[in-house]
Length: 128
Image 1 (cartoon, rainbow, N blue to C red):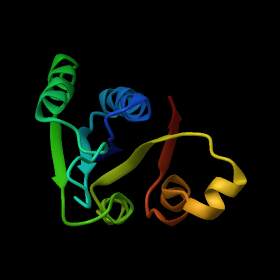
Image 2 (image 1 turned 180 degrees about the vertical axis):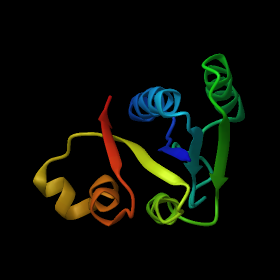
Image 3 (image 1 turned 90 degrees about the vertical axis):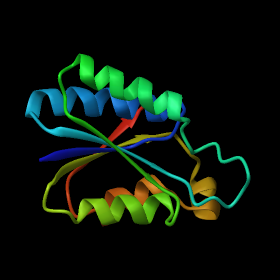
Image 4 (image 1 turned 120 degrees about the vertical axis):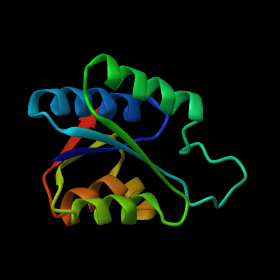
């Protein structure tokens, strides 16, 4: 089985990774870190560097947890996570969340909310 972490290189992503690593350790799962960029700009703050992903891999290796990285540039983050949630091997999705106002959610939408409502597997939402 797999525990899938939706990872962005910020405090929310690091909190989701830490919780995902803990769960994968307890459950004996493979930890899959999914980093997605739709490449709509030259510099995408959601795209983790190779060095950062290597650091996450080292943390998983130190915990004796099998580790995979999935980097997608052909799809947005929401669709990628929902696609992963449909896999019979995915036990759980772990995502980082931040507080937003009602108006902010109305205007911008909330990817986390859509993942929580539409995913086909359990979702753990983690605060930074």
